[in-house]
Length: 434
Image (cartoon, rainbow, N blue to C red; front, side):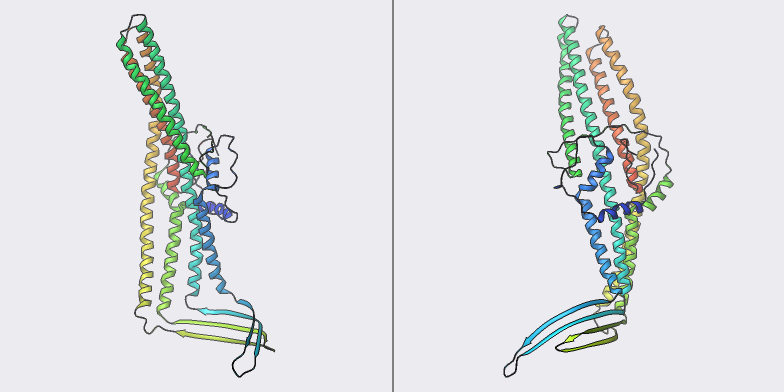
């Protein structure tokens, strides 16, 4: 199977574009669902309508706004002021005062200010990776649901074929009983076969309805909406990926790892801020006013430089520094845990891909053999050379191999999606999409 990894930078670019537009909700106009939906169309629809995407986007907007608010401290702040006041006290005349002025304030230096700005910028950057991670998680869920529906359809078809075959066997046995060449007892196992086949068909229809309900929830569609999926076979290639290469791709592309690296940077900046709070804090600022103050027009300005040192704060500053250092160490432990989880997920997905590819080939061979065995059993029974149990056993074996093949195809598609998710790439658009 060949697939090209899509870097987190591309995902962030796509996500960043989405921040600028209003996100549709489930209450918006429904899309045109007359045509069968491909996997990529389902993914696109989910990314447009699922609430998790809107939540990730709004969190990013909030983080970016906070970063801009912190960055504004690097620049002068201008204000336009106007006020009017009229006072009168006992034994005094009434006094009126009016003020109209333009004032400017500028922080020349403040201990820890640069670190606070940098931390806000890091947090805003990290939030972009959370969008990418949310998109990947939702894409994986839609892929699983998509192939689950196709598998449920196949199960339903197999169940209906089983009902038809069971009824055909019943007719064949009934005809032999009617002409006196088979005992009445031969119909009993076939009756059981027919009843079980019908029960399996009902169960398959129910599972199909449940699969569609799961997909509707992911796509943000109301329960009454009906749609179809395009069942285009996947072009399957031999799986020959190298585990070391997959590990390298995952380490470079997974957004959760990138986000945690930024979390470590933010925690380190928090340590620097806390250490600045425990020492001498220096500040320098400037301000100026120009305006008219109760009949007088003029200007004023001031420069201010100061330093503070916490002589005694009951250990509050030291506790904040200790907490920040512990947060920094915890961020590194979380990174180590994420790396271990990533390695386990990639290795498991790699092994799973190798296993499901082999099981799919075996299921295809078994299905051919089961069909041949059933045809032979039916021919022998028609000639009076076999008992009816041989036919029902062959039919059961065929049903089992059909189910096994459907399960193998489903497992293969899900394993491919899980592998892509484990290494941090966008889930492969298997059902006929590029």
